[in-house]
Image (spheres, rainbow, N blue to C red):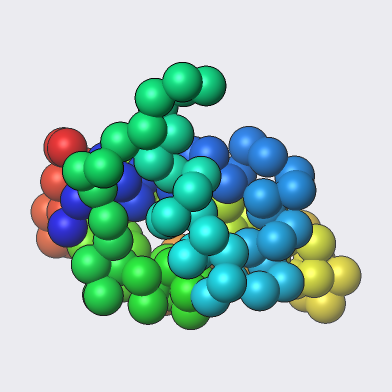
Length: 121
């Protein structure tokens, strides 16, 4: 797994309201667009040709599978915050404050007492 590439996606998308909206509404198309034209940008003049998602990473991103991303070593905070941006409001309306965060924690309960995956890149 390219932890850097996945973490760059999580960081970039979470901090741009338009990207987050596009990712929420059509994840498959947005992940492909990000991988081809947004992610490779190093700055206004340079593009990287080195990185790409693995099939497993791409599917986890497309399916909003934050458990798989965590298990592959995506940075915990970046992984949590992007999905709070997507799911917090609908979950809060239905189940009250911090309901998405509680679900996130419960789906990772099987990691309790184990060493978490490294977030080193």
